[in-house]
Amino acid sequence: MIDLFLNNKPELNLYDKSVIEDNGDVFFMIRDGFRNFLIIQSGTGALGFDSFHGEILGIGDAEFMKCPLSANNAVALRGRFSFTRPVLIGKQNSYGLGDRLGNAGAAHLKAIRKTNFRPVLAQQSIRELQRTGRTAQEVIDAATWAVFREGYREGFGADGDHLKTTDDIDLMVKAGYTMFTIDPSEYVKNEAISMSKGELDIELMKLPWDDIDDKLITFKDRYIGLEAELADGFVLAPTDQEIVAGMVKYGRVISHTKKLADYLRTTYPEHPAELELSVDETDQPTTLFEHYLIASELNRINVELVSLAPRFSGDFEKGIDFKGDLKQFKKEYRQHLAIAEKFGGYKLSIHSGSDKFSVYEAVGSLNRGAVHVKTAGTSYLEALRTVAKAEPSLFREILDYSKSRFETDKKTYHISCDLNKVPDGNELSDHDLENLLDDDDARQVLHVTFGSVLNGSEREKNRFKERLMECLNVCEQLYEKNLEIHFDRHLFSFN
Image (cartoon, rainbow, N blue to C red; front, side, top):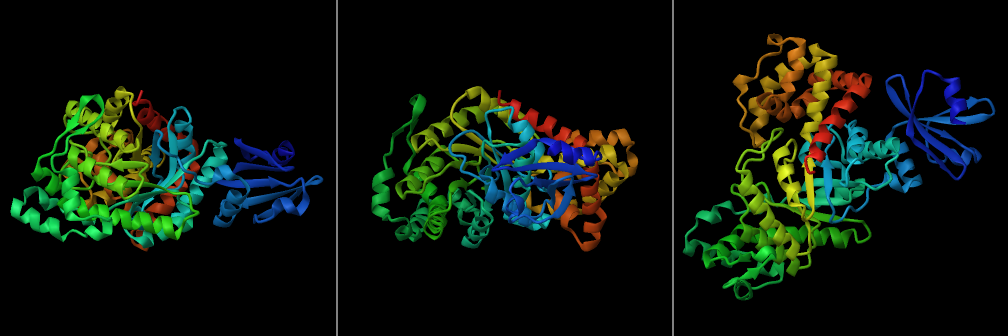
């Protein structure tokens, strides 16, 4: 029946891996011009088309439905095929693949299926949703279409990233997310590190002990004089000052994490959910005792983590490789792993994980524990690499506009690039435009201005986003090849 459909419409291209027969009905995806469609051939009459919406096509004695990749049809597809719904990934190696444009998922899967990593294919923070102008549901829908097109049936996760409130949790549960990354950064008391003993004692008494089912005296009994034996003979023996400062710094983080975890568990008891805690957005690297304290306290109050993101030593800037002492990073990472192993074997999560190739090699060389990596902006940069090749004039406009927005847009990012080192578009040949995507300064300028390019004023949206998406649709093969090569490098570095 597929041959009948394609022979009648020779201009169409079939996505071979999408073909699936289910109870007499055949489903597959095609490319028609520069758009993709779901095709259903019903072997059971109208029942095969139930819940789907599209154009009925009569070809010979057969009927087909040509369905746009709409939200309604994504819901229907998830209802029909379980592999198109997000699942729990658990404590195994995983990769977060943020897709800010909604068209990178298929290429991400092409790269991921060559490895033993599990994909967290739908990953978007509240901030990213605001800056791209997308919804949480649109991110899930894009992942659904990607796994169907690629015939990926091994299961994918969906991460509601950097969630701060119960409203954030409500939004992500409604959309079908299965991983919930709690961001308690507003509750970190960074100044604890420089407080006097007297100041720390006062702040310690003010902590919401009842909220974490504890008392000050029992807390001190647990930790004062602690000598915790961890793997590889590593013994953690914090001073009294470290213990008090650690709790002052993170006591309200623990309380807030418990509040959100309890809310998720009690409000949505049937919803599949796994928790990550992100403490990477702090002024100083997470000390080993701080990590131990957070993990120990969450374990005590029955908050189970699938992963935890410390702030590691060195600089994890956006869009470029790690800056810092790799030997020191590797030593500390191994010790952080020992803490994770003591409290359930949760994954260590590397945030701002795009392009950290030297870190991947360091982690992979340990051949120990499990890791989760989060990337997002690097896929957007590969989209721009494609535009630079296929439509240089559009890329020049985006480059110059990004430079004009940089000082405003950089404020919420940890970067060190020099805007003066990034040339204007008219200073470069077409060939040099592509090379710009390998320059650290240019990468960071383009990386942090994505929100303005994609979701600025109506004028900018019409000026850039529509043309950008059209270019990527026309050049789908080039775009997906760029992405696949780029993520092959990310993933294979762990070997």
